[in-house]
Image (cartoon, rainbow, N blue to C red; front, top):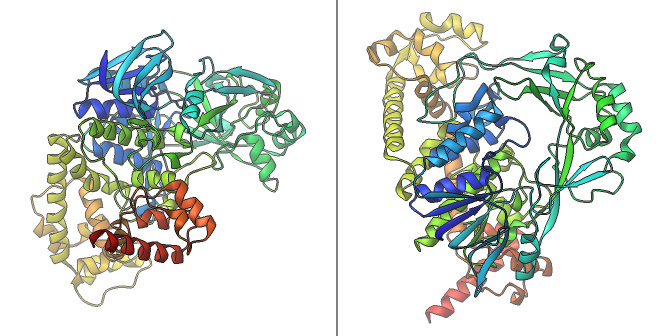
Length: 627
């Protein structure tokens, strides 16, 4: 058996990688230990959220499957941060865990050029510094031109529940052995990270009357730009809170937590801490939110978001029963922590190919990230670039201006991470440009040219942009009178008009809603008479007009940064020989080996003065070579 691309692991990263490589035309094999658990939602049954929703929209815009699957399996949809500016709006869906996996398998099995093999990979085949295939636990050797490794939490995975330790990549599933040790023998640096998950509860045993109901949006949207809108009915989530009694129980038993008694030495996610970590770190807080999330349409299983723990089972039960609504809670399975191997991502290039072993790509938690969305994004890019490697084509590199995916990968490659990396909007310099609603406009043309985004998707985008342009012209030309709008302006606390003005001059005011304004303008209504636009077109036109100045400033800032990105640094550049640089900067730059000055400027510890020194050295180097 010989393949162009072998993808190891059937999680979110592996599924997107396999789909991308196969859809681009590479003969692809996806190897996973359990074909009933494609893209398993090992933690919470939800997709998206702050910055993560933007990533799902970007994956969809590129032709990936995560958005389609999320829409199909959604049981609730909410647009978070609506009270803030559009740069902060973040779509999030609650999902049916079972349907999510079923839909992924259906889409993968319909994908041409994609084969499957259920087995565990125990080693890589290597020849002259390049990967040439894999070896499985059955002793099968399968040849391939490239390999994408997406091992999740399975490499030497160790599960902790109190003092009990179980080898496994997930509860009830065996861990993967051998690959870490082999990669170390090739010269890779490895580390350990930790994550956790909360107990699962029988929803029939909960008293929802003691909780706050959390409804979905009245008019639920979707992630996919071209997929159908499946969601009509929705299931509610609920919110409750811990209290001083819960905190006392956990505090009295914190010495039994593997995190605090030395049993776990690796670092867990800063922004998704365990309940015992919250109690310890935020001792001044008298309560913490608990989100009660249903696992699907036809199950009573509930995910207790906010109560991740590795405390002993009896302590988990005792503390949980003190939470309002959980007095009679019946547990399906306990919370647990899991330690696993990862490889510092500074050992990768921006294509996600390793610098040490040619043809080997890493994606997902193996790179030190946390979250389905971050993993899926890396898988998509790794799958694309494995295909590009096979075809001897240039890799796809998304910049920080192009996408949150570009920010994610650049952060990992340039800065590395010593704790599980999670995406936030604050990590992006160009947040207004990288809005969730602009993902298709930014990325579909790039992916279509590559051959991944379909003609159907590209035509849908062109139609959308044409409608938006037409609507913006009408909005720019239309006027509005004081009689039409002053009562509304008074309601929103805005200064009344004294004479007729251009509609857009009112639209750009704070607290003014475009649809309300457009309905009141008789001039605008005459201009669009008989024309029907989607709600998304109205929203996009409003954002473009309101934030035109901010977008222009971000574009100017991006151009300045691109001038540094265009200054390439030779792969064999001698940083240690640059005596004008501090030893710290020399060592860090020599370890990361940035591709260009822009990337070098983002390496932690490298100062603006260092970039000036490098610029002079590079210009001297170019001058010497051209002589």
